[in-house]
Length: 303
Image (cartoon, rainbow, N blue to C red; front, side, top):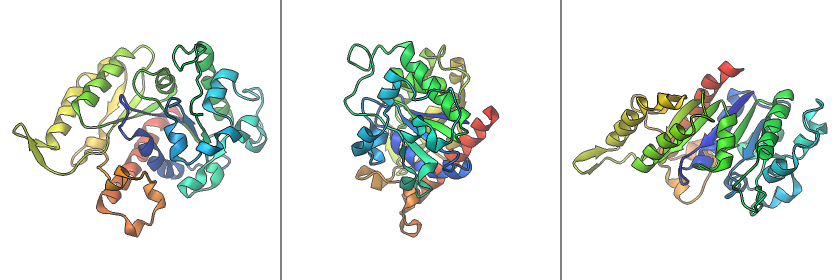
């Protein structure tokens, strides 16, 4: 089973929208279906962005939530193997495959519940070993029931649910804006977390990259930003104990382009009329497909 985390050092990178746009390609790459689903976990419990992106905010009360799992544990635990439609954990998830134009049960969501804390002090800080242990049980249950993948929509930065997400993943899709604060913050995060987050394949994905050529301080962008990011991270990142992959920056590639549509409305591009897509949307689709292939490539050694 593939274990994947979508992470960004700071908010505003477009991490959740990147995740939902890659899922349709992962369904195909991993041959997910209702018997071998992809399970999405909204770990950004302070913002619940993935839950809202998939239009499930009003359905949270009808299902399990990530907070309930972290506090109460997994229904039935990992004691027995049942059919998915008989196990109380899987029947408590939301079927969201239709959002991706695939079989409804091929993608399941464990949503986050807005305004509900996990920590015993009434906040989402100071979580206990109990909280992270229950996420470990979720992984065990999904593995035992032959799920195709579990995908964490991590919180940003040093939040504890980010540590849990990244620590349990084999592949981390690290989203970033092509700015110095993202560049330096990303490296600093993995340096500081190198005891709990190690031996991961990290796919670096610059997002919302403008293709317009401009000159700033006598330097031409975006090429200057691309070279700066590669130079800053290529030599130093091995010290974090993880492997950083620059496939999305190879040759003429420079991550996912700025998609004008997303300035006003998030969409899952693969579900739209392909003949009506704008040039930036078609280029973004190609990158989403590439990243899905990279996830399979770097995650399959764990299979």
